Amino acid sequence: MKKEGYVMCEKCEGRKNPKESKGAAMKSVIRKQRMDLSILFLEVLIESTSIFLVKLSYLSSNNVQFYKLYQIQLGVMRVHVKRGINLAIRDSTTSDPYVVVTLANQKVKTRVINSNCNPVWDEQLALTIKDVTDPIRMTVYDKDRFSGDDKMGDAEIDMRPFLEAHQMELDFQKLPNGCAIKRIRPGRTNCLAEESSITWSNGKIIQDMILRLRNVECGELEIMLELADGPGCKGLGREGSKKTSWMQTKQLD
Picture 1 (cartoon, rainbow, N blue to C red):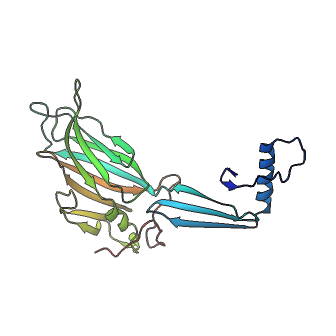
Picture 2 (cartoon, rainbow, N blue to C red):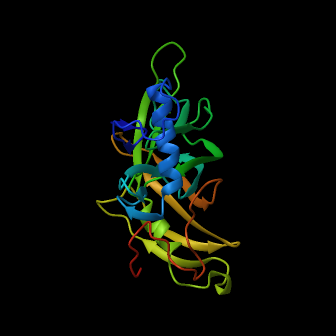
């Protein structure tokens, strides 16, 4: 019989009272097995970039084994939505834009700025990183009071180059302020409107970028990425510390 992840037998082992219920007998057996456990192995196996399969193997007389999945938070990505540039017109002569930022099942958004195709939001939005392969998606909408909000284009950000910069074996504290760690050129695999730099600035690694919006006639977004450790987060090794195992790192050019 299986109960709470344990492989049990039908014997009423440990039953002191013949009238004792079967459920109580099972609990007694479980307690006894827990006391008899002699070896505890904890094997952390990487199933993907951030989903860890934790195998807890209890080796006792019954060789009990069970598995649990834990989702490890790696950090908090701060997306600084600075401004929109030449956004599309959706309300006769202007638009009322706002930005929705999503990462996996998380969704945050900026405030609405009325009647402006070159809005300045200057807002920081926070998203928890659980899988480094998930892209950050940004969608611009035009707020409509009496109908559904109109899309004004979208863009996608691959976090991996930015996160890889945190894994470089460098003493960042010795770098001059504003030093470029890596530059990423615009191309078919990204939404960059121009070259983006990952820099060491005021004791932090940041990435400034201008994104060209897709699925729309015009429009760009200026944003900045910054990483912060959050409560319960595994974190990312930096400043020459030992690399964490959430990602296979490589030499950056």
